[in-house]
Length: 353
Image (cartoon, rainbow, N blue to C red):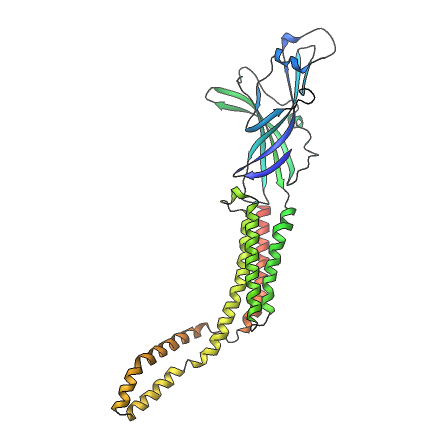
């Protein structure tokens, strides 16, 4: 078996199969105690089942050094027909839990022209009819289970016998942990370093925030290129990368909020200035002459606009933080704790549900 990259909702697997079929033909009975092995080229002179592989995209019979066929006839008329073929078969898959997903693929054998009234298909040894998967090693998958079943294919021309071999594949997640998950976690932790940098070091904190955001964006794009035709589906790895990106972007916003609160604290001292200005102007209005009143009327528009702007700034006093430096102290505790909780929920859900 050889696995390949997924395509949309299906992926192709290539398998080399030793297909052995056995049936009884009374016309081939002969006297004797030993079986008779024939040349593979004589298969055209015998009746053989018209078995084909469903969902096969490409198949070929090995012919080095001769066609890999085996024909063996037993005295009671039983015929053993074995061939060695390599086939590429499509398998539907669900990428919702990628890369913690499990895929169940099938290999289906059907009769092309003979219906259930003409021929009957069955597995000779049940689940033991298929061998070789216990020692099979794949790059991305591990074969967890396999079993056989007997079914019927229903078409407009009738009911045809069908044999189905099911095998369950579990994706190896270690590669994705080292390639995607660990770098994402390290980027999130790196974004928390800014919480321990002084708020006055604006270039340092902005540099860390922007760098981690851009690096995380590049990592997300690289993870999507591994499944180019499945980007329209939300996968488990997309959810995790989105979570990490949210934490990194949140760390950048945290400094923006902290910096704003610091500047607001400095400007909040001027909130009482409009009232004092209005009182001074009222006292002067009683003592000034008509010329003074004309001058004040000319500047009334500008002074009133400034007063409105200062009063709008004072509205934010309800969101005022007495000490903006405490925001970093809260972030040092809340960001790691929330990230750990979300990680626990994420891994429990995708691994056990």
